[in-house]
View 1 (tube, rainbow, N blue to C red):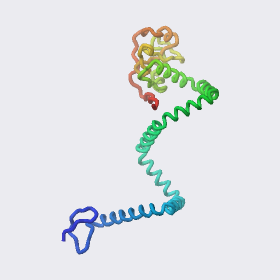
View 2 (tube, rainbow, N blue to C red):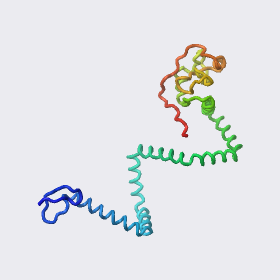
View 3 (cartoon, one colour):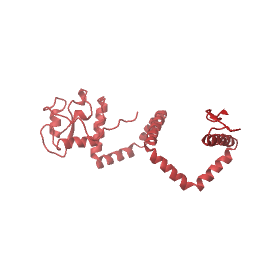
View 4 (cartoon, helix red, strand yellow):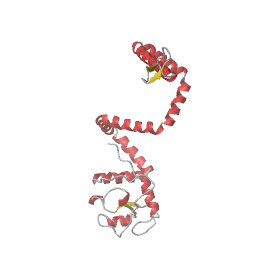
Length: 228
């Protein structure tokens, strides 16, 4: 006798009062019925449900923690991307409030922040110089402003820690923009070469002192743009 399975709606040869085509369909259907019943019960008894959940979590703490760690290891990349997108969306929702709060904090703690900034700059001079260069590029309207500290270190190594114009080996190399920022140059890899202070001062806003080939690709990644 040909019948339709109650769960998957596929035809099957049934004996007497059989309703399901297989044991899998029977078990799945029972699970669905039980889940629907538990949902209705939970809606009617939220306090009891909450108490039971808390009791279960306390008595199965280690088991649940192990299961969570296993899931996080398996789906690490997806979880990281979801967190990044969530943080970005939350930032854009509260951007106005966060900017206002930060401005108020800076206004009320100006001396403390200046002291911390000067202390950090003394301890990390390379980072401070890099931040100052980025700020200058931003003020000059540079579209590409993504040179990172690791890229700058790689550029210096590529030039053997020598000035690109006079070949002087010095520990105090400065960032020189082949096309100056004031003339539309970009603060990015292909517009930067190392130069000693003397050559950088001679060049100033004029053309390059001699033809130079900047580094076009690095192992290090560029700096990620600031979230706006």
